[in-house]
Length: 57
Image 1 (cartoon, rainbow, N blue to C red):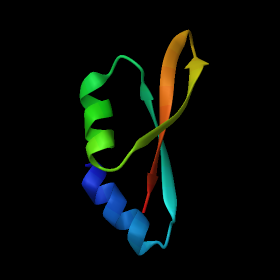
Image 2 (cartoon, rainbow, N blue to C red):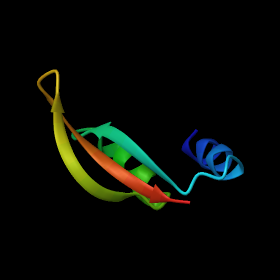
Image 3 (cartoon, rainbow, N blue to C red):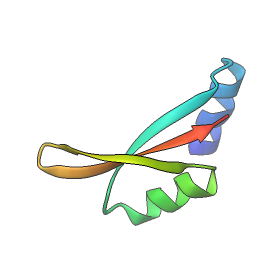
Image 4 (cartoon, rainbow, N blue to C red):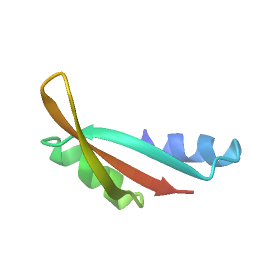
């Protein structure tokens, strides 16, 4: 799914994507990182900690 999203974003001439993921979702974090995601920061939402990753297209 992420790979398809990256293709669509590139076709739309976006330069980067910012993706949020719950901090304990290890599988999704690995997918994001394998697609070039770099950790930017964490935040709290509804008592859950989430991270934001940036992917440069």
